[in-house]
Length: 632
Image 1 (spheres, rainbow, N blue to C red):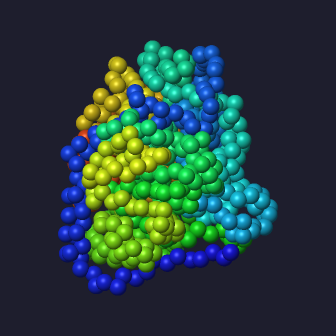
Image 2 (image 1 turned 60 degrees about the horizontal axis):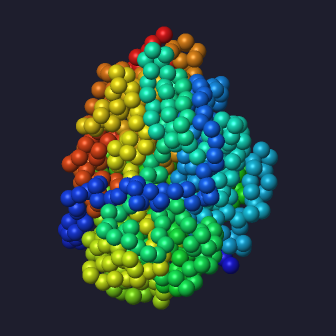
Image 3 (image 1 turned 180 degrees about the vertical axis):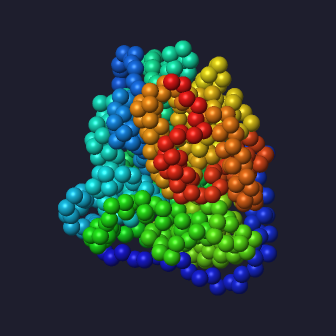
């Protein structure tokens, strides 16, 4: 077997920008709903089972714990692990990690659905290089990261590891996490199957008091919440869900007891089953090829088609490892950030669908390198051309013309997170796969026997919700933690009219508290860049507090106000872009600008991720910790 290189075809149709813009508006209006963010159900009550951990049989019994630590880290995903690693590098080792799952990984722990894997013939063949640990004797499988592994997997230089392929899969990501945990001795500091429920600042002892769902009580001088942005399950608010008599689950809690198989696929229990999948985003795009091969029949229920660009994954070539210089990963991250902003370097180190997409520049400052108006016009035309090629690819790969038309996305390429796949579109040529396009309306309701769309019932034995996660809802709702700061102020109450931070991860009135995420931070398509900077900066502040005997530190009211103004000033181009987009989690289901949870204050740093990273670096180099109130 030999690898094939997929290429986006050129569009044969002349470009009519006015007609395309009007088509985008028409398709957007079909999908706008007045209920916006409230159209989804929380996995509580009758639906609580959808968030049960499918990877463990039962919660391990234990007695409640009462303990103290210098730092308490909430979350055992990459954010929490990076916080722990950076603290360790700074000599701060008295910390605890609380993780609600049964293992490390965060989104990579929960999302263990079947994904692509390398056939044996395509396994990477890499030499064993001095000081580089490279796995060559096993094939990695499972869900695949859509960001290049050399910039996504953190601390590669510190770990002496080079990923085996350009886009890493679940099992290799887990191997990387194991190495990180071992390197920094994190296992003995971690408590699994434990969810923080409340965090309260005690002004008398200048510490945080944290309580959990297991009856635990923790005191810590500092607290870090790294609960992630893709973990709170989002269920559609469909009538009749609780009445369905077959098996149903969310993709992030994949039930292999129902499907058979594992992350490699081989879903043997579906051979005589009719399977329905609601949702056609990034997860569905990866797992549907396995479902199609294994199931008797598959119905794919689509509200809005995704953009499906080429993937072209490939093994890491031997020459990649031979000339790596110190700092290579950080340099590659910065190159990626610059390529997807408007300060495009001549050399494109990553060279993929992200760096070649003109619309990714919404993640950077529009006038950073050239005239804003002229650049905006160029970007719009380039994006029209890219989307025409993506739609031409649908025509090229999907045989039935009616089905092909329904699979074409009619919106700008960054309105939804782009998808990259070389098998998804062709699966609709299979006789056992049926696309049920809802023309933007979504599914009507669920019946005991199946799914109803436009009055027609589609009978299914297994129903899979590939409906994603809450991203732009209130912080407490997403994290599951009630955070109470000085004078009894609850964080969600303070942020009722929109978040207010300093640098994106500290807020006035909540001393010694750090929260990792996207809001008001520098954000790249590579979220690991954001987490890398937040963890380094947090570890620096905590270590400086130890050195200088600072008992409490928080964002000053003035510094916070200035930062919020900075965010608001830079948010206009991005808000304007997303206002014109089809509904999705990037624009709060079309509510951007209409709701405080998706307002200018929830925007990211407008100068771009690398500029934000440099700002933090310069702040640390200055050594004065300006903008922070301190108690000695």
